[in-house]
Length: 244
Ligand code: UDP
Image (cartoon, rainbow, N blue to C red; front, side, top):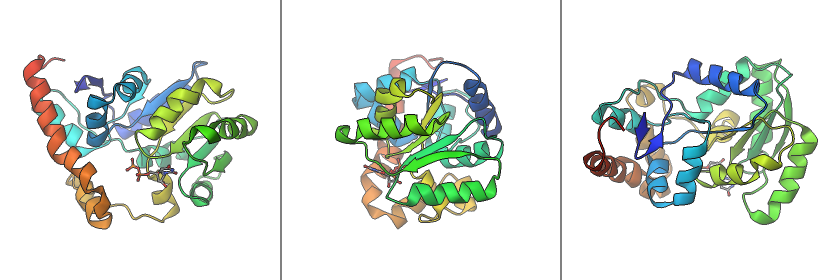
């Protein structure tokens, strides 16, 4: 299925994790994205970002808005698959043959998230962590660190769309990474420095409301997610057939 011309993989959480395992057994490199409503709005005006979303191996639906708009356009999308949940579930079944590198977030946070993930999953091998930055001047150093650590999986927390653009630009420079995924605020949630919305709010599709109350500076992004995204889908729906 697609939304605003972007392919979305309609998968459950379990299917998403199984798909990542499948990609890990291949020799090609893969980028995975978890588009939410704001990211689809960004993609509608940013052609470089749109092209990253169109070329990625998997796009998981991260947001209640996508489920709602899928239904509105006559398509079936039953599950939300967030980056944080994917990372946590994936790590439960990841043996030491697939080491993981955590890149991004504020200094020290990726390391705290790694400690938490290791404590919960004794078989998990963390190849390394680094705060780094998405600035071009830092990329050579980051690529060298990651290649020295030799991970199979790379999770990048630079915020969207920068983390996706950064992965697309550098993926081919990695010698061991097979799967790379932008992860947004996942390290902050796992390290416990940001609180996730209560599960009742999440199940009602109101995680965005929780985030705007806690971080009012997000109001512009929320406006894009809650108002601009449905309007764009409405317009796109009129321009293109429903079966798109
Ligand atoms: N972040 C970063 N460097 C940057 C911008 C963001 O490390 O230049 C980190 C930030 O600390 C956070 C993560 O990126 O851990 C996700 O940020 P945000 O909550 O804005 O992203 P979202 O999940 O909403 O896309």
